[in-house]
Length: 235
Image (cartoon, rainbow, N blue to C red; front, side, top):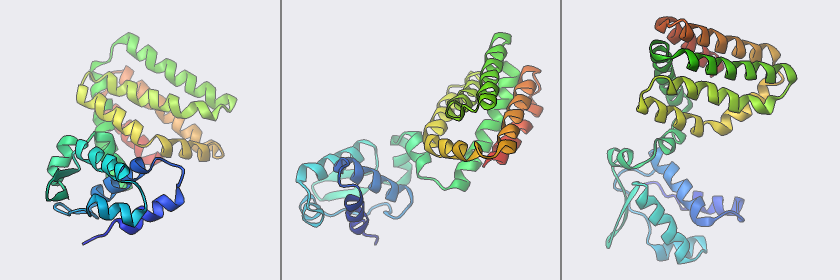
C-alpha cells in the first residue's frame, strides 16, 4: 500500500513558505489521480499526520476537508478513505482531472475535442464571428512580427476558445476552458522556447490561418483536418 508521508514531508521541506494545507491537498489529489493512492486507501489519523509532518491539526483538518469537498475522499468516524474513481469524476472539476493526466492522454483528448470543435464551428459560425476570429489572428500575427512574445499565449488561447464558443455547445466551451487552464503554464513555457524558433512559430501562425479559412468557408472536414494537424504539430 503506498505511503504518501515521505512525499508530503519532502514537499513541505522544499516549499516551507507556502500554505501547508493547500500543498497537502494538491499533493494528495495528484497521488489519487495518478492511482498511487487507490480506492479504499485509508489515510493516517489527524494526530498521526500532525506528528509525522510536525504541523498543526487545523492544517491537516483543512486539507482533509478540501479533499472531501472535491470528492476525492470520504470522512467517517472510522477514518478518511479514497473514493472510487467514478465518484471522483462526478465531483471533481475537469481542470483538476486534466492536470493529473499524462501528456499522451492530454494530447488524445485535445485532438478529439478540438478537431470536432473546428468542424462544428465551420457549420455554425456567423459572419461577424468569423471577423472576430480573424481579428484575433491579425493580433497574433502582429505580436509575432513585433516580437511581443508575451502576447502570443493569451492570443492563442483566445483563438482556440473562440472556436469552441462558436460551436454553441456548452460542453465544448467548458471543456476547452478547462484545457486552457490546465495547460496554461506549459503553454507559456512552450511559447518562450518557440520565440527562439522563428520557423516553428511562423508555422503555428500559418496553421491558425488555415484553420480560420476553413471555418470561414464553412468546410467542416477541412477545418477538422487543419486543427488536427495543428495540435499534433505543436504537441
